[in-house]
Amino acid sequence: MRYPKLRELKEAIKAIIKGPYTNRFPYQKHTPYLRFRGRSEFHKDDCVGCGACFQVCPAKAIEMQDKESKRKFTVHWDLCIFCGQCQASCITGKGIMLSNDFDLATTEKRQDLKQEIEKELVLCECCGEIIAPYDQILWVAKRLGPLCFSNASLMLFYLQNLSLVTKEEAPVDKKQEFTRADRLKVLCPHCRREAVYKS
Image 1: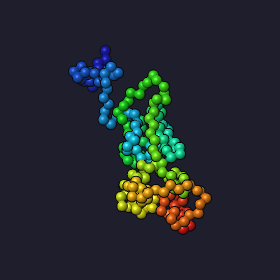
Image 2: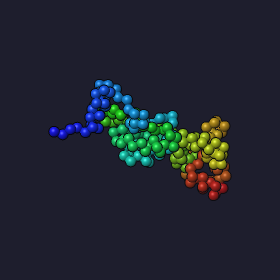
Image 3: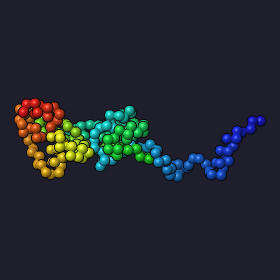
Image 4: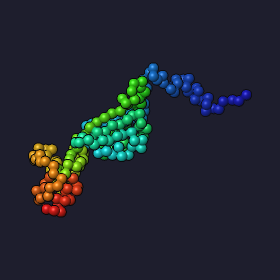
């Protein structure tokens, strides 16, 4: 006859006194640990739309689409592996975070297992190309503080946001010749280089 090990006997006695180690989920609510990695969620007010989470996601669970003047992010919870790379790479630290929500089982459509947010894009005033999301440029300008005035596009964007400068709506003409006045516009890096070089 084999006798039980002392460690196993100790655990059995502890379980009799303190109760079982498991809980009765789904009949009783389960509270995960504080650092539990559950469903990833975008926080629209804190997300600046930079796309860092999209670039580092190993499971390709985050989708990014640029259409016209909007950038759309979609996180697919059915593809997510809850690794936390999106949260670790977020430049604001709060744009996308892993929640404690782990119960993703559903009998409904698989397409419902996702979250979508949209961000407004800033377009070049000369060629119409995408520069960056509105919230990202504003976040960078606020982080730089007075140093944002060393970059003409950042300075103009920041002043436009404060309503200190009015934005002139001009038709986009990709074949126009750059003048000195074009240096005082919100421009993409290519147009900025051309405007500085040719003026």
